[in-house]
Image (cartoon, rainbow, N blue to C red; front, side, top):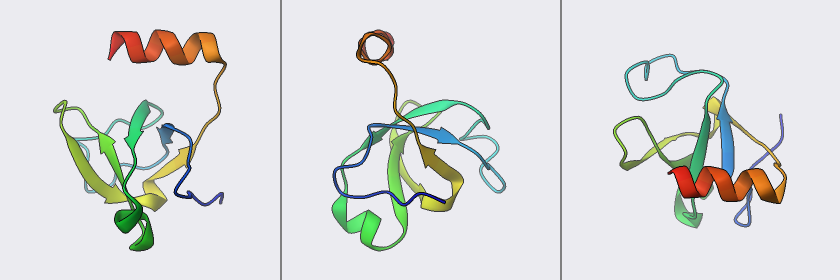
Length: 78
């Protein structure tokens, strides 16, 4: 499984939501916020279904690369 780094992709896809079914949807793309201390402890900070940012286990997500045009559209819609 790819690991997330400090300069990680800003977008992650949720591959597992066990224990977080209200907050996360499987196969949904989430915006990740920089949080180096969280990464050191195996967590990522994402904006979840509540619209707020929270820490979740890194193992629930995979980083994804998306084209610049799609990136702009996602950020505009957020």
